[in-house]
Image 1 (cartoon, rainbow, N blue to C red):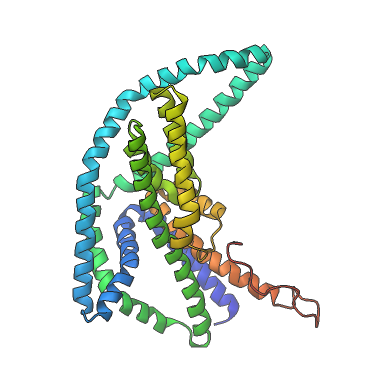
Image 2 (image 1 turned 180 degrees about the vertical axis):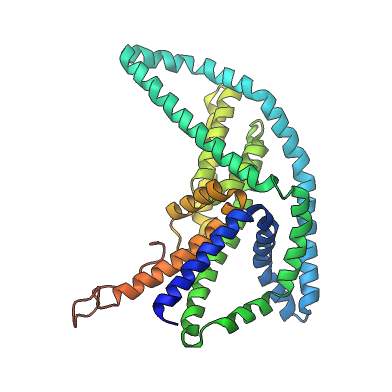
Length: 366
């Protein structure tokens, strides 16, 4: 097979993959979820297997304890969070009224400093920005919810996902061995190396970032509850969960927490304490959690992660969010490989001249 034929085959394969995601998006959700969970649990299963357990026994134990723990956590948290969300929805009008009242002084100060024409321009800018933000948030939420609940209900997701996880986890090594046997023999080491880099990228981000989000959620929930912020557990836990989107999670939590604090307290002290909780969370994440659990293995720039998650969620709903980081990891590794090949090629180098820099781009450049 020539290079051109190989390129055409890859393009056709990618087009078929996109078509399947579009047509079978909701149907694929439990299978993709099961595959992701199996990928997370495979190292634990390998350790049990190394300790003398058979693969079937190790898979059964790991799958059972994982889903039992998940159900226990949901049974503990869902009723509490649901009650707080319902109470929060009832309090939203009061929060807006309190914020409006407390902002009257600031609005009066602004009106006294600006001319009438400038005030109208400022109102138009705020109105336009708010409308665009609400429109985007509405579309994104609708896509996300439709990806979860249109064809495949949460009940079927809960039933199918553990089954898919068990069988994939049991046969994971055999699946990898089978795929390895299909690789072209003349390029097998090169493909294995790139696959290893993709696996390191996914493991570094997915497994590490999941632990970071969980720890941040617990930290923010406990910290805001200790401060006395109403609905601090909901705000903190949600902030931690969406922290896999760089900067967005903390920004969302900070704005929501400070807004509730202003409406609830009206004094600078408690408001500063709420801000201090988020500041401490950022210090904890930036200096301890992310360097220890994620490190520099990811090689994905924060801008690319944000773009991939937003684009995946807008196009394919929740399934798109789940596939966004793996696809971006593959693209990032392949892009760095191609860039390294270009920097070592005659197209980049002058004839007979040695390379002027490293043949590989630095991690995080793509």
